[in-house]
Image (cartoon, rainbow, N blue to C red; front, side, top):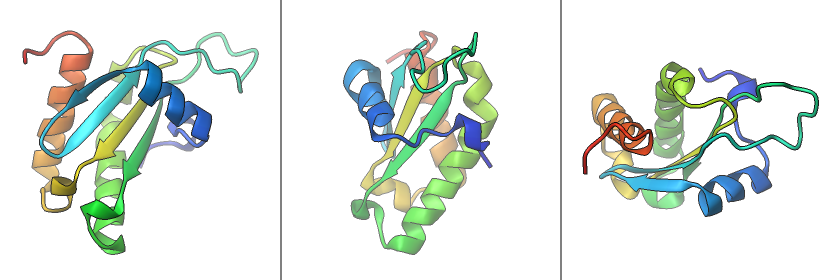
Length: 123
């Protein structure tokens, strides 16, 4: 599970990542990344933590399916959070196809999106 200190919780943080960050889409998800954003809510920290948030709408499926997708995405981000620059804000938005995708497909799409955002992936 993604540690609590690495989770986005405030509406303003989600808005900052989505509006001011870069975006890459794949078949099951869209990833928004705001690199090196400073955290106004944590004064005194020298290197703010990278934080991730997840958006899974009702278009993905019923509550059980949405929660399953959120759990899978949190688990996948836990292993990848250290690859991102310190202080980054990441929002992973699940598309309707995410409800039918298996864990491996979500992992491939997340890896491809992050690689592209970090400058290492091809279109």
